[in-house]
Length: 191
Image 1 (cartoon, one colour):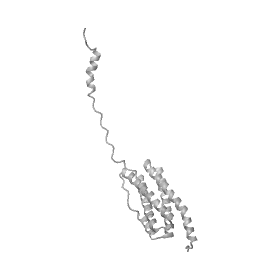
Image 2: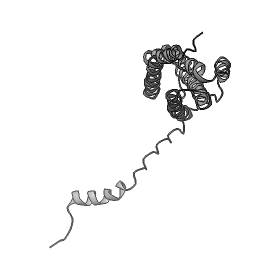
Image 3: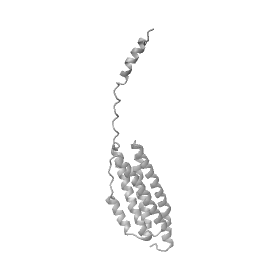
Image 4: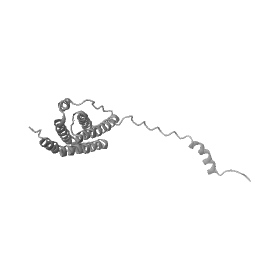
């Protein structure tokens, strides 16, 4: 009696070591450290949104010492927190795409801030509410164009957040401006 392996099995066993000789899988290329750069329109919007945030922050800081109404002071401090948080979100997003945002207020906005810094009491309250309303309304056009031009979901999210933030302060300004004027007339200080 012969003990042997069938020919098919011998061939299979002979080829088995060859299976271990397969080449290693190629390594995947490393992921980029930074996201691809923004489009020109997206970068311009982020810069504009950042400048808007800086202006709102500068104006809100004035409310502590210049506002008469506690409601205006509270609104200013809320605006300060909200716009600083939004600016931090912008900085994080810009950093991922290697975009540097400015840290200084534009000259025209600085003039507005300087003008308001010379006012106190009811005059400041009225000027501050008007300034935040006007600045937020002026910003709405650039936010609207972002939704039609960008394909970046992060930029759209930032624009949506800014739009909601601005709408909140526009609404507050519209609701407080008539009350500030009425208080002025009631107190007999209207000239």
